Image (cartoon, rainbow, N blue to C red):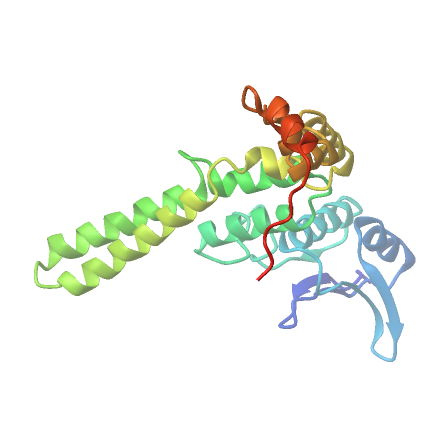
Length: 244
């Protein structure tokens, strides 16, 4: 009697489940592909966690199907998971640009060094090819297209133009931040830079002594004859004035 087909499906919860693998060989192949085995009152099942990235779900499901088919199992795989029948499904559907920005955001969040952070942020801030520049251009194009399609929609066209200007301001605010990003987390480099700056500045105690009133008085030269006049005045007897 032929074995029942093994069906790999994507459930509404987002989990990918393989059902029908009742013998040990098919179970081993599914576990080798990356599925987790579950044995409960529903029987033996294999599933992928809901947190598995979509690309990994598709890759694991297809790898499992290939191994099972090579072992002469009949495998049912839906079109949404079958790489042979459909192109890879994008996690955000038609919003490919948004999905790419999500990928960049993940790179930013997982950056372990300032250099890695700078490389990820460069996809946003590059002056010519960065995401901000592309979005700014798209908003400007939308403003122009609104005016071309309906010359009475000045207010709507201006709103798109203002949004493009806001992005220009954001770009100006973050310009030349590459070197600062690369130094993020590098405390030793900042310490060395601070030491270099302090060595080029005069000591604050020396500066304070140089600007003190006593030092200023000592530096001011006396007019010619001042010392002699002071000596003659001190040598004369003191004559008290008349009493009143």
